[in-house]
Length: 251
Ligand code: SF4
Image 1: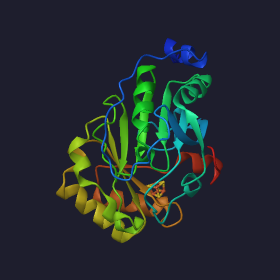
Image 2: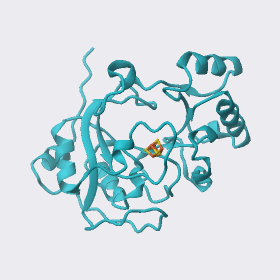
Image 3: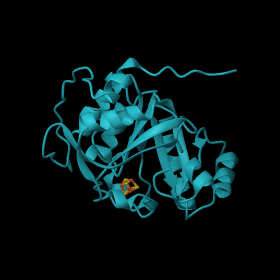
Image 4: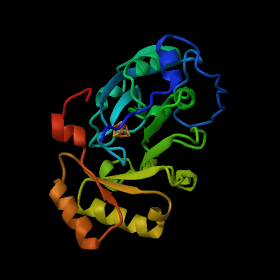
């Protein structure tokens, strides 16, 4: 059977440099926000087309928009190049480049995308243009003003990440069933910590929960063994793009 993905008409208009529907920029007071030089700009690290490597959208052809900057320094970070590298670009230009890929799935990632206040504008404009949008966020910054149409893939940082103190626990109350919570597990101790937190806060009643092995620290087989032993109601995942292409940038 052939599956046809319907590309929204607004995508074509954006590709032609036309106006996408008007957006009301939301006000936001978030700590650690990078003040944009101009209201319609973002600092972009890279835009690329690949398979989604994580979350329930795994395997879907997706356009990734990686924003520059992150206030965290996780020990396992594999995108440190996004801390500073990037080019300031108009949001119209970002929309136009996304449209050239002709797919409906867009993932806004980082770094920590919400570290730039104008990320909220980009997310709303992508939704207005008809894309199915996901946001990968560290869980350290307020997600309250993210457009409701966006699927938020939110980390909870474990002790092994070295950034557990940055978790913004108030975010948990803002998540809905179309969001996802992700733990990157670095050790047995991390696994036990995450398992206990899941139980204490009933995380699986909020939204799907993802467990990922930290790429260089524990094996997928080890994590799978623990999850099966405890019959945890989580989705164990590996980073599909690394399985296919290894630790390569832009995939
Ligand atoms: S939040 Fe993400 S981008 Fe930032 S340091 Fe941690 S792993 Fe890297």
